[in-house]
Length: 158
Image (cartoon, rainbow, N blue to C red; front, side, top):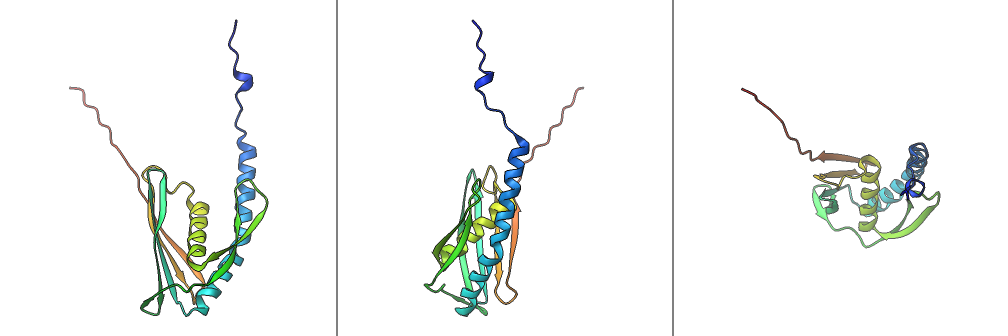
Protein backbone atom coordinates (compact mmCIF):
# COMPACT_ATOMS: atom_id res chain seq x y z
CA UNK A 1 0.00 0.00 0.00
CA UNK A 2 1.29 3.45 -0.87
CA UNK A 3 0.39 6.66 0.85
CA UNK A 4 -0.09 9.15 -1.99
CA UNK A 5 -1.39 12.35 -0.43
CA UNK A 6 -0.10 14.64 -3.17
CA UNK A 7 -3.48 14.68 -4.90
CA UNK A 8 -5.15 16.17 -1.80
CA UNK A 9 -2.56 18.88 -1.13
CA UNK A 10 -3.57 22.16 -2.77
CA UNK A 11 -0.89 24.01 -4.67
CA UNK A 12 -0.31 27.71 -4.37
CA UNK A 13 -0.86 29.63 -7.58
CA UNK A 14 1.40 32.67 -7.22
CA UNK A 15 0.23 34.23 -10.49
CA UNK A 16 -3.41 34.08 -9.45
CA UNK A 17 -2.61 35.45 -5.99
CA UNK A 18 -0.59 38.33 -7.45
CA UNK A 19 -3.45 39.21 -9.81
CA UNK A 20 -5.90 39.25 -6.89
CA UNK A 21 -3.50 41.37 -4.84
CA UNK A 22 -3.17 43.87 -7.69
CA UNK A 23 -6.97 44.05 -8.05
CA UNK A 24 -7.27 44.69 -4.31
CA UNK A 25 -4.61 47.43 -4.44
CA UNK A 26 -6.50 49.15 -7.28
CA UNK A 27 -9.77 48.91 -5.35
CA UNK A 28 -8.13 50.43 -2.25
CA UNK A 29 -6.63 53.21 -4.34
CA UNK A 30 -10.00 53.93 -5.94
CA UNK A 31 -11.73 54.64 -2.61
CA UNK A 32 -8.91 56.69 -1.08
CA UNK A 33 -9.86 60.12 -2.55
CA UNK A 34 -13.49 59.84 -1.44
CA UNK A 35 -12.55 58.70 2.08
CA UNK A 36 -9.95 61.44 2.47
CA UNK A 37 -12.38 64.09 1.23
CA UNK A 38 -15.11 63.00 3.67
CA UNK A 39 -12.64 62.91 6.55
CA UNK A 40 -10.94 66.23 5.78
CA UNK A 41 -14.32 67.93 5.25
CA UNK A 42 -15.55 66.76 8.67
CA UNK A 43 -12.30 67.78 10.40
CA UNK A 44 -12.22 71.21 8.73
CA UNK A 45 -15.86 71.86 9.58
CA UNK A 46 -15.00 71.14 13.24
CA UNK A 47 -12.15 73.68 13.13
CA UNK A 48 -9.48 71.01 13.51
CA UNK A 49 -6.18 71.87 11.82
CA UNK A 50 -4.20 68.69 12.43
CA UNK A 51 -4.51 65.16 13.76
CA UNK A 52 -1.77 62.83 14.92
CA UNK A 53 -2.38 59.10 15.15
CA UNK A 54 0.22 56.91 16.86
CA UNK A 55 0.36 53.14 16.39
CA UNK A 56 2.45 50.28 17.70
CA UNK A 57 2.53 46.61 16.88
CA UNK A 58 4.62 43.53 17.52
CA UNK A 59 4.21 39.86 18.33
CA UNK A 60 1.38 39.50 15.79
CA UNK A 61 -0.73 42.20 17.43
CA UNK A 62 -1.00 45.90 16.80
CA UNK A 63 -3.19 48.84 17.63
CA UNK A 64 -3.76 52.53 17.36
CA UNK A 65 -2.29 53.93 20.56
CA UNK A 66 -3.58 57.50 20.49
CA UNK A 67 -5.37 60.08 18.38
CA UNK A 68 -4.65 63.75 19.10
CA UNK A 69 -6.57 66.54 17.37
CA UNK A 70 -5.45 70.15 17.36
CA UNK A 71 -7.00 73.48 16.50
CA UNK A 72 -3.88 75.54 15.91
CA UNK A 73 -1.59 74.73 18.85
CA UNK A 74 -4.41 73.74 21.19
CA UNK A 75 -5.45 70.10 21.82
CA UNK A 76 -9.17 69.66 21.16
CA UNK A 77 -11.64 66.82 21.42
CA UNK A 78 -12.93 65.20 18.27
CA UNK A 79 -16.55 66.19 17.72
CA UNK A 80 -19.29 63.60 18.04
CA UNK A 81 -20.12 63.45 14.35
CA UNK A 82 -20.53 60.47 12.06
CA UNK A 83 -19.34 60.02 8.51
CA UNK A 84 -19.56 57.36 5.88
CA UNK A 85 -16.39 55.82 4.54
CA UNK A 86 -15.82 53.10 1.98
CA UNK A 87 -14.11 49.80 2.79
CA UNK A 88 -12.47 47.24 0.56
CA UNK A 89 -11.93 43.67 1.73
CA UNK A 90 -9.25 41.46 0.23
CA UNK A 91 -10.76 38.88 -2.08
CA UNK A 92 -14.00 40.77 -2.68
CA UNK A 93 -14.70 43.11 -5.60
CA UNK A 94 -17.37 44.91 -3.57
CA UNK A 95 -16.97 48.25 -1.86
CA UNK A 96 -18.85 48.46 1.42
CA UNK A 97 -19.88 51.80 2.87
CA UNK A 98 -20.17 52.07 6.63
CA UNK A 99 -20.97 54.94 8.97
CA UNK A 100 -18.42 55.57 11.71
CA UNK A 101 -17.85 58.09 14.43
CA UNK A 102 -15.12 60.55 13.44
CA UNK A 103 -12.66 58.83 15.79
CA UNK A 104 -13.46 55.37 14.39
CA UNK A 105 -13.21 56.66 10.81
CA UNK A 106 -9.73 58.04 11.52
CA UNK A 107 -8.70 54.69 13.02
CA UNK A 108 -10.14 52.72 10.11
CA UNK A 109 -8.41 54.88 7.53
CA UNK A 110 -5.11 54.59 9.43
CA UNK A 111 -5.44 50.80 9.59
CA UNK A 112 -6.30 50.70 5.87
CA UNK A 113 -3.23 52.79 4.99
CA UNK A 114 -1.00 50.61 7.17
CA UNK A 115 -2.31 47.49 5.45
CA UNK A 116 -1.73 49.05 2.03
CA UNK A 117 1.75 50.43 2.73
CA UNK A 118 3.13 47.84 5.15
CA UNK A 119 1.00 44.69 5.33
CA UNK A 120 2.08 42.68 8.35
CA UNK A 121 3.32 45.74 10.25
CA UNK A 122 2.25 44.09 13.49
CA UNK A 123 4.04 40.76 12.95
CA UNK A 124 7.16 39.54 14.73
CA UNK A 125 9.20 42.52 15.97
CA UNK A 126 6.58 44.76 14.39
CA UNK A 127 6.58 48.46 13.73
CA UNK A 128 5.52 51.74 15.27
CA UNK A 129 4.98 55.26 14.07
CA UNK A 130 2.65 58.15 13.44
CA UNK A 131 0.22 59.46 10.89
CA UNK A 132 0.13 63.25 10.54
CA UNK A 133 -3.10 64.65 9.08
CA UNK A 134 -2.63 68.22 7.77
CA UNK A 135 -6.14 69.50 7.25
CA UNK A 136 -5.21 72.66 5.30
CA UNK A 137 -2.97 70.72 2.90
CA UNK A 138 -5.36 67.73 2.91
CA UNK A 139 -2.45 65.32 3.28
CA UNK A 140 -1.77 62.30 5.44
CA UNK A 141 1.89 61.54 6.10
CA UNK A 142 2.98 58.21 7.54
CA UNK A 143 6.19 58.13 9.60
CA UNK A 144 6.94 54.40 9.85
CA UNK A 145 9.57 52.62 11.94
CA UNK A 146 10.09 48.92 11.42
CA UNK A 147 11.77 46.91 14.15
CA UNK A 148 14.38 44.50 12.85
CA UNK A 149 16.08 41.83 14.89
CA UNK A 150 19.55 41.01 13.67
CA UNK A 151 22.27 38.63 14.60
CA UNK A 152 25.85 38.35 13.55
CA UNK A 153 27.65 35.08 13.34
CA UNK A 154 31.37 34.68 13.60
CA UNK A 155 33.35 31.48 13.71
CA UNK A 156 37.03 31.24 14.58
CA UNK A 157 39.11 28.15 14.13
CA UNK A 158 42.55 28.29 15.69
